[in-house]
Length: 174
Figure (cartoon, helix red, strand yellow):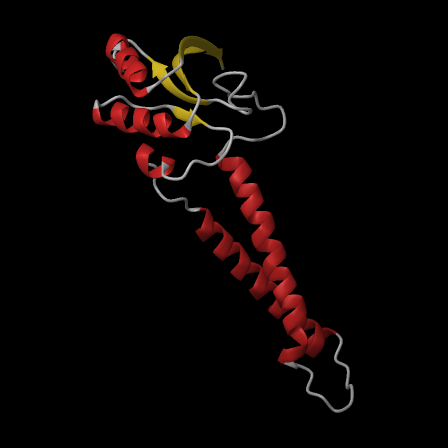
């Protein structure tokens, strides 16, 4: 199965942002935008919602914290109680370093795994680049080409008016 794309390339981020806003106002759905570095305001221009990744990080961190505290309490009180200098067996201050480390470890690993899974970045995944220079010095807008998606002539005109230096058609096999 193959999909067709119309790809407009830009040399600067300013015209790219202008093209994204112009295409969205014209009702054209933008499949993806490629940039060699983060462009401020691009998320808002594309209408991308805020990520749910911080919630995954929070839940994983709280899970790691609860697990660390419960495990240390079980070990210190029930499984291996030691009387060290008359201190209580469930000394919460002694649990802080391990609980902190487990919170950070679980949150970090879950965030990395969720990021890779949500973006389809797994071993053997095909590269999805709009052109050979988008990781170097070019910016690109990819529009999925369907017969009913948009008027190609109008989209080409809007891209050229916004400052596209090259417009190509690509077929990508899935």
